[in-house]
Structures are given as C-alpha cells and as structure tokens.
Length: 41
Image (tube, rainbow, N blue to C red; front, side):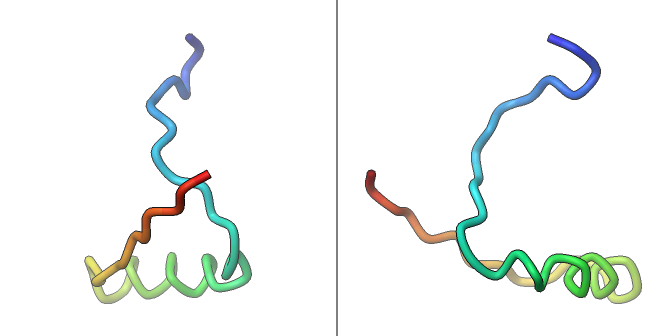
C-alpha cells in the first residue's frame, strides 16, 4: 500500500496551471467552492 495509499477519485484534465493559485487561496482564505463534472469514458 505505501504511505500515500488512497482512493483515486479525481483526474485533472485541464486547468492544471491554476492549482498553485488555488492552493494559496485555500491557505489564506479557507475552503472554496469547487465544481466536479462527471466525464464518461
């Protein structure tokens, strides 16, 4: 299993470049609204 074992529930397919800013926003402003969209294979 290893130290980072877990359930994969999300794959980022676009907007990866926005993750650092999201991280800073969450750090300084707390939880943010987020939208997950279902994509069928």
